[in-house]
Image 1: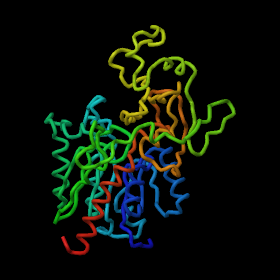
Image 2: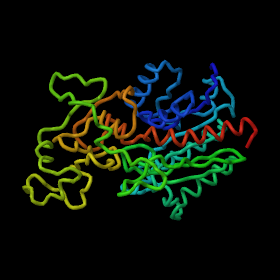
Image 3: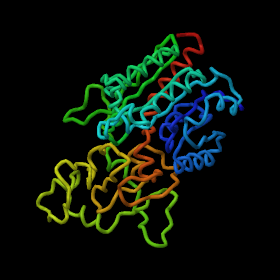
Image 4: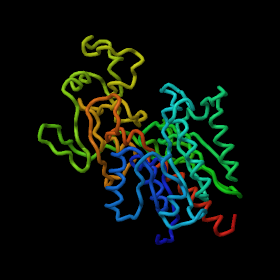
Length: 375
């Protein structure tokens, strides 16, 4: 494979490519991606083609591939790759899920990062996960045991791991999304996580002079009206497509900006339906003057002032995706379990590109420093 002056990377659990975008923007060339979901793979391939990149997409279960196979296909050797990164499925560790940890087969996928790192021997590793990983129980029932095991495995490979819970809103994303980022580099380790670029709004200018968090209204500005779903409508390439069912339009009507339907006890009982006070993210209308709640793969949030779901493109704006990035796959109008990821879920499951970029830039700095032997 031809080399460039840029650093190189391999992406695992690539999803729709949110983490990949940020890593590329930081100055890395992504040599290969690995992803199970077919719609995400269509998304990855389409954007690779549009950007005229030579990235290989491995579609399938990561356990069915081998890191040596990747090295052979790329015509590179162990130690060549600068960064191995990925966000393994988080459902096993999520605090809103069943929290089955290593009893859930998805929990075991976290350690595929170690399996690939052992052979590829990248100069750095970046892993994104939900905060629940920090307290997830191992098979013996030890609280925090899974995270402890992961750190020990990285140290066994002679990496020095560091970690931090990071809030996406502090890095230019219009979303109150918290995730743990783990970065492991070879010795000597001078890696430091990036300082925030945005801060919580207050009545006075903050002491560091940082701009306030980006808001939903700010990032949605200028999009215009979405294409409405009809029997003969064609999904636009920008995914600004409205699939809200009539009944859901009726149910969200009258819910104020920034509120959820279950809290509006003055509305008719048939409109509230079976919702309870615990259903704070169902039928939730976002607030234009605040960052969004964490976008997830389940419920679709509603527009601040219109009686409709947010479109996939609006989700992308809130998540920090560039407007020239496109999605492939269906746009479904309802919540519930699905086998393959629709466009809303592709975004909700991904890493916000600006957050990935901020961390990847700091990784790039330490790699360049080590290569120059100045560290």
